[in-house]
Image (cartoon, rainbow, N blue to C red):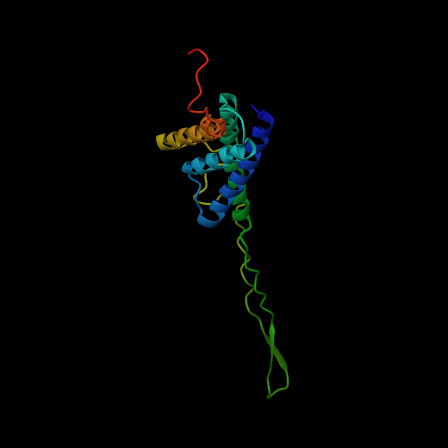
Length: 184
């Protein structure tokens, strides 16, 4: 069954999937639940890459599905924290300091100073703001489509993690055509 290899493959796949979620959000500003499907595929492929031989295993499929779904929600939370941190790093322009300028009056030889009003203080933005399209830090499905995307992703992770016995049948030596069955 190779559960150790399956677990390591699922963790590697989930880590790559979380990286994918962060990259997609930072580049495209997308944080939809349909991203669970490519996330689950990546997690399932991580299991498939490490578990190369063996028969189809329901336990390995369930393990992959549970890890993929749990890691997806952890990834959404990480993306929400990254987005919040980026929103909090809004760079304020430094206040322009207007210094008093000295002008020389050529007739009297005296120096007169013109005072300009001080600049307005910079406006401080609230620190606990999120990006406008970001979900809360504890995401949850909100519509029936979100549930459907998660169900499809769970099925994809299960099927890829479970493996198939057809690969084993293809690698098994075929019986010669002239062989006689022992019961015949």
